Figure (cartoon, each protein chain N blue to C red):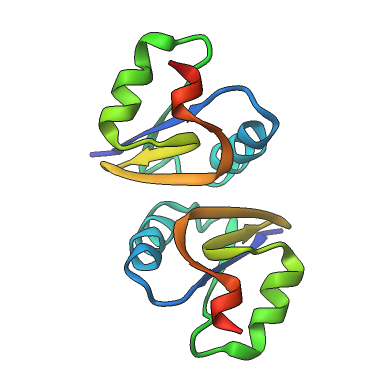
Length: 78
Length: 78
């Protein structure tokens, strides 16, 4: 079974850089990746927060949160 | 040709968590991964700094630096 992963971002330059690394180098044979733009999908900010996301860009993978550099605080996106 | 990646850490709990995600989910068909413990390989702190690493854990991949959460400032490891 594949591991679920969600990459949360807000379209910021730092986000886009991190997204390209995630999209290019994550092992898609093992991981089902969903990419969520919290600037346009505001309804999902609460879900990200519940998963432990404090800032974007962040990758939630197998329940683990990895904040990838720092683009914007999650609070800004509410 | 594979992309070179170096995961720098310092053995901290945050580092070990990030390491497990990197080791498990990075696409090893595309990426040659080296793992460097800067607590024991102090001679490589300068190399990490030059690559743009500010804190550990961090993954330098294809010349791009991704700080994965925050374990320790690089300055502490000098």
